[in-house]
Image (cartoon, rainbow, N blue to C red; front, side, top):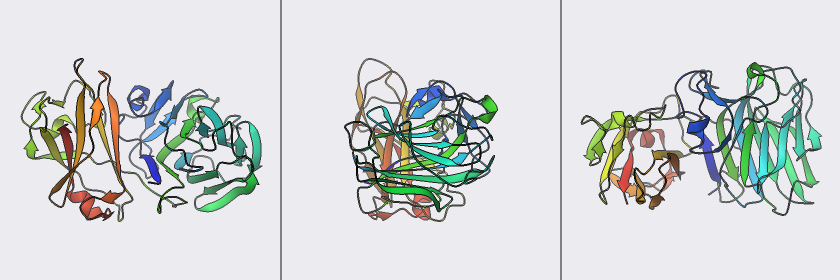
Length: 344
């Protein structure tokens, strides 16, 4: 599968300027301060802002494919020069291909700290959201890169060294703040990561939007024990995780909790569905967890994921096709889907 990761930065908090590095650490490796901002790219929702130079977040290892494509919305908050890269593809923890921005709006492509190319002036404008797509083919001699801003190629090259270290691939992506000030650090939204494998989502895809949907109703399948009351979905519908305040729990194999979800808003076609389950164990006994998607009246459970930590983690299930039709998701398909969990 070429689509590896996406995140609209909903689901970590629900208050402007709220510190969310602890919540994001359930899905990323985080370093220092991260805040959510209520000025997302589409005029609603949330964006993420790392504070200062050493504030960043890094994905888990995603691929060993030579090609990586990183897409994200980016707001440049200042006309200051940034000495450090705001987007870094990494190879085994080492900075590989990176993007930086100069005071005049020029984008600079680097391999580590070595400059490989730069765009014309003013491709990035102060205080405006831009859609950036950064594609790299990793190789010591036959590598290539291309950067598109709002659909237009602004800098590219072929037959160049794009490899750092022994691994001929980038496996993680880091987005980071800069060493300027709180009001001048960058903001990110709608992160999408792909590689070169598979027959789709392995190249530039153009503008995209990531939207969060949340539980809005119980179904007939509500076996789990609630932390209080008899309505299950209200205990798991928080965009700001409240952890041990409201929850459902169970230990009985095959018990399920399945909920109806909110409809999509302003989206006419769908690329993929990603299920995020915020989960932990409450004692020293690991258990298996399955996520369930009910589509077209049929339940499609995931393989079991062993949960063993008493700390919360967000478990992912990425689905490019509707399992009921084996074809791409439709808006109506997403709007009618039911999603839940099962004790494995």
